[in-house]
Image 1: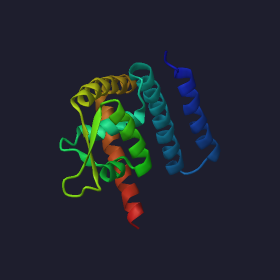
Image 2: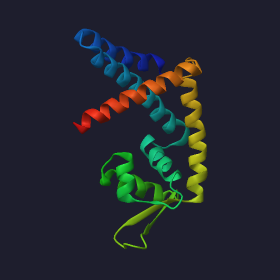
Image 3: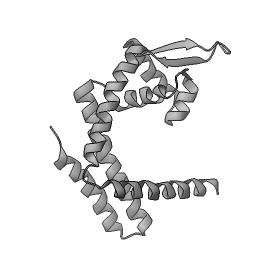
Image 4: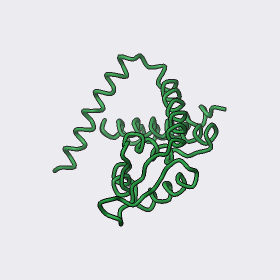
Length: 168
């Protein structure tokens, strides 16, 4: 079941808010990016629950671990995902109890914990990642590939501008 109407309502609410502000283009751009992100995230969250009985944050942790063959410390994982240590710890403990990750003391510092994906975790993540790619492909499927590439390049400039502002 797709809740396009509800998603479109969220999109329209954010865009109407921007229209009422009659603010500069930067405000309108921010509201457009936010509304698109909210719709995509809401759909992904719902689909992960419906199809895999899991959450988007659990998927995010597994995705980060998938890129770290040797594992990663809890602190590094927290920094990578831009969430608190407590949030990462809770998610990792759930994944560990499901047999998707292992948590062991670091060899160089017994106080530090290293998280790695199990074979079961890798297989589970591969299924979820394939579905994730399919879902995103469908959501962006109405946009020509060359336009997606242009948007990607333009958003890199936006990201760079945001980073430069933070350095000031």
